Image (tube, rainbow, N blue to C red; front, side):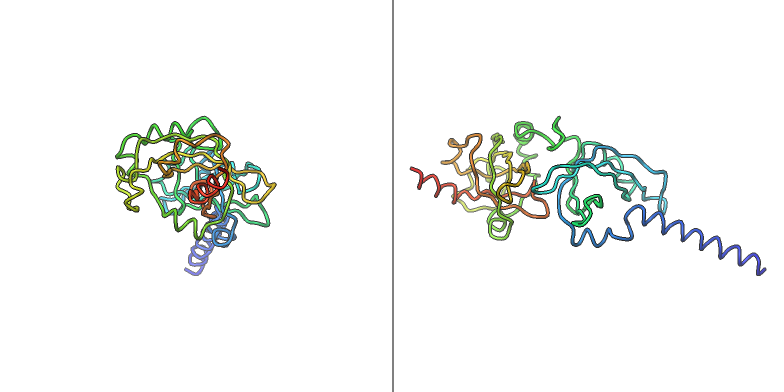
Length: 262
């Protein structure tokens, strides 16, 4: 009896040890929580996905990811990491998917996917490894009012007041054919009929640093839309937690600069 209990206890302990090792390797334990709370935010493109064969509680797969990481003001780099993914989400996590990440500021090889930031599915992607699609591709997709209305939006005024300042250089732009009115946005009445554009910008956060490419669906003042041009400098503010997607252009500062120049 005592021998049987001893064997059973040893089996349970061994099982718990294996689970601990698996969870630690998958990043569930150890530094993951700390890095997600205090790490440097960025974006990553999933270049490869490989199940490890380990399943936790029959529903969570331990998956090996090859990521191409992009941090503000730094060159992109590739890294391999492991994450647990629910079986119900496996179909959505494919090469070409873009995800938010947090990176250990002391060791850039420690990268963890921040699932709370959401994902940009691979089906939206284009040929570029750094961005999911061109401005024209996204704008064409948003010519359907129902699709445009489904796009998540935030307050540009709030972002301009609280976000990290950056200088954007306009790389491409395309009219979606929609307006805040047609998409049901809550905005000042005088702005309801301004066009919504897809803007691609090279963002610089620190003078002299390498720019980071960002893309945003943004309202453009009607009077200013005809003056958009490639290479145009636009003062911006970004969300540090998602700097390549949550961007607000300071159109008032742009207009003031144009008035001064004229």
